[in-house]
Length: 296
Ligand SMILES: Cc1ncc(COP(=O)(O)O)c(C=O)c1O
Image (tube, rainbow, N blue to C red; front, top):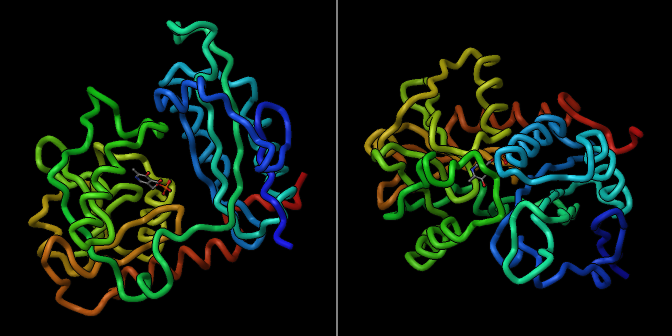
């Protein structure tokens, strides 16, 4: 029989069927919370401390408190994953502003809700789609500018990205990316964007979630001697690119074979996408930046 998932909720390790979060929780009512997702591959969590730093930055910026230190989060994430017996896992951890005392809630007076939920490893697309690349649509909706909800908040409020995904799926695409207010490429619904032109790599530098996979691919490109540009990119640049791909914790690189009706000129994944993705998985297999689940 399949083992029931175990979650960590507010100090307890608890079976999914017994896990409860109040319907009055501000995370549920308002999307008022911060989360992050790390992945474990062959029993090794990748860049756990970098994810925790990003998580703590978002918590501070959102004025959300946690009862756990960064070291405690580390231990709880490892322990919950071990309890689930998962080697390959996508591990989501969440802090919400919790349950208010009264109906009119003062956002300063709350006990946080803290959750860790390890699930079997998730790829953004199935194997067949990954091997032939995805169809990406440029959404009519623009990304949040930093003077509203800075995209660096990794927050629970995901309505806007759900809407652009719905728009894309309804139009027969696999995913959508959005441009920023000035019309420069920002990012996709749950991944960062890269393009290759004449052997050099380009990726947007502002108006995006600072993806941990993005920073890893930039490092791998430097190691491979591929010139890297973190710069403004327009839709035109993507239409005229040699290769375009996304990056995320959910699977490394994902090649794009068509972008808003423009097919890529050569078969996908292209050579640089393939090279960098292979280096990424070698890095994961080799344990670099890794924390073994066996470690205490
Ligand atoms: C909006 C957005 N951009 C980029 C990413 C990729 O970030 P990472 O590489 O840290 O998974 C994500 C991941 O969920 C995301 O939601």
